[in-house]
Length: 252
Image (cartoon, rainbow, N blue to C red):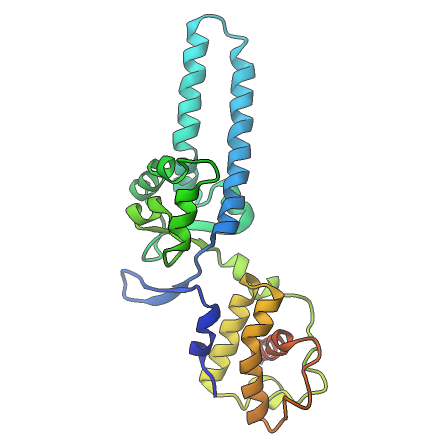
C-alpha cells in the first residue's frame, strides 16, 4: 500500500490553514517560471518607457520632462502593485504563465502586502540577474524572495495551470496490464488519494522526474495486484501508467 506521503520527494506543496480553519494545499512557483513572468513584465514596462519617451518629445519645456519622469517613477514603482491589487494577484506576466500572488494563508493579496513586497523588489534585484532573489528563493520553503518574506506572501500556480485538462492526450500505457478493478475499484482511499495527488503534480515535473517518482508506486500497485513488475515492464513509462489509472478513477 502507498499513500500521498509517498509522493513527498516530488511535493513542493505547502499545506496552509485559512482563517476559517480549513486546510488546503498551495503549489509555490519556482524561480524559473517566476523569472519568465518577470521578463514578460519587464518587456511591457520597457515598451511603456519607450512610448512615453517618444511622446514627451512633442511637449516642449520642463513640463514635458517632469511629466515623463513622473510617469517613469509610477511605472517603475507601482506597475506590479496595481496589477496585483486589481487583477487578483496577477500581473500580465504572471497571468500568461499561470501564477499569482497570495497571502501566506491562501487569501487574496491585499494592497498593503502587495505594496510591501514590491517595495523590496529593489533589494531582490540589486545586482544583475537578481542573485539576492534567486538565493532567497532557493533556500526557502515556498520559493519566497525577500519581499515575500517581509509581506507574508507567496507566488503559487493557479488552479487552471494545474487542471487535469492540461495533461497529455489519451494515455494507453496501461493497456495489456490489469489495472485494479478497471480503474480504481479495488484501491484503498489512501491509494486513490496518492494517485490523484500525482495527477495534480504531474504538470510541474519533467518526464524523467515523473517516471522516477512513479516507479516505486507502480511497482507496489502491480505487486499487490498479482503482477510481476520485474518481468513485465510498463510500456510508455511508469508515469503514464499512473496517469491512466488516475483518469479512470476520475471517470468512475
